Every structure is written in structure tokens, then in C-alpha cells.
Length: 298
Image 1 (cartoon, rainbow, N blue to C red):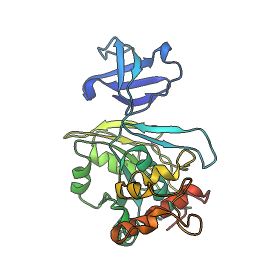
Image 2: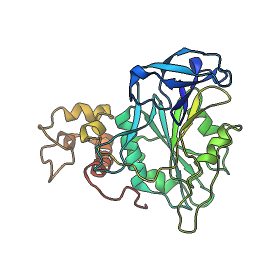
Image 3: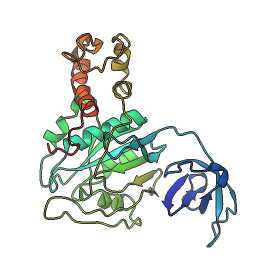
């Protein structure tokens, strides 16, 4: 598994074992094939891991999941953030800087479309209660945990144990602090929030770190933008089995936004909890179909 990328060199854990670490280059026959943290690869050559040795990556396995983003909603170029992660831990501060509902909506969309289970991790609950912000996503059945420096880590550890989990969030929300608590020898740089309420970037590249029990966490750089040019409404609806089944009865070209845009959308026939989930998903679909600022405050 690829655990780090640095200037055309890939750090790999052989067999997923963090104690068997080698540095590899991309074989010429792979051309410009993108290789990212989380990728499972085949390696040949010197696998001793000794200083100044270099192996070669000759094959990248098919990805089970992929987290993608674009620079903005008009950019056709997709950037792969991580591969094969089972979960996406979306780290959001409840204060200082204030939480960004739009950012959470967009990362949720990317997680659903990419095959990752999203989990909302809230920090700084000592400054602001978490209930109101978390309730915004209640109908999506989104797991919520508290991961601030003043809270015990039991709930976070329970959800990441034995899994490959990517962490994403704005700079300054406490993501690197959380990583350092989960992996005490990680030594991830921790920044502060500037006077204008924006965090300073402290993590400059993605890196996979082994947990003390089992599993890995992938720390990613602080995100300033999260475009969704590569996402369609069907990608979002497909993440919810009940909605996807109902959407089979929608007319061709339906965007699932409901009246007046889609007066014959079959999702409007759902009732009860499913109907509430439709409304929650339509908020996400609105984010996909518009170019509104992704980081609007709650």
C-alpha cells in the first residue's frame, strides 16, 4: 500500500505492514498513471527497505473507492485525493473558525460518489454546542463523533479501528491535533487560526499513518476549495439504496430536485423517513447543480 508521495517517490508498506517500508519509483511502462496514497501496488526490485535503495511500482490495482475533487465547479481536471479508503472522517470545528455547512455538503457528496462512508467529526465543542450543527445532517443517517482536544477519543477510536480512514477538513479545525492523538508518534505540524478566522496550512501532503491497534488514518492537507465538476445527480442518489430504487421510475434526464425543475420526480412519492431523506439529499443536489460558494458559514 502506498503510504506517502514525495517528489516522484512513493513510500510503500509491504503487505500493509508499517514495519516493512520501502521507497519506490514509478516504472516507465506505467507512463503518467496517477499513484496516490492508499493505492495498492505491485513492486519489484530491491525490497529490503535499506537506505538509498529504490524499488519499482509496476502495477496499480483497481481501486475499491476513490475520493476526488476538482479545483472548482467548472474545472474538468479531477484530482484524486486518496484511494481505497473505507471511510472519510470530515473534521469540522464548531467555532474559531466557524463551521462551514457548504464544505460538509460537498465532502459528503464526494464521499458518497466515491464509495466512502462519511463520518462527521466535530471539534472545539467546549466553545460551542454540537447538537444544532449535527442536526443539519440528521436525515442522512450520518454518524457523528466528537474529536476535540478536550474530549476523550473513545468514540473516534471505535470508528477508525481496523479501517482505512481518510481525514479531511479546513486548516485550523484541529485535524492535525486529532491525528497526533490517534498516532502519538506522527508528529504532524499543528498550526493556529489567523486573526481573520482562517487556519494556516500545516499538513502539506497526504500521508497514511498506522494506528496503535489496527487500521490506518490518512491525513490530508487542509482544503481551501472542493469542486464537484466530476459529480452528477445520479452519483449522489445512487448512494442511498431506497432513493436509488425509487429513482428508477423517474423520467429520463430527471435531476431529482423536485418541482418546479422536475415535476414528475419519483422521489416525491416516498413517505416518512425516506421523504425526509429526500429533502436532505436535495440540499446536496443543489450544491452539485450550483456554483455557489462552497464554504458558506452555517
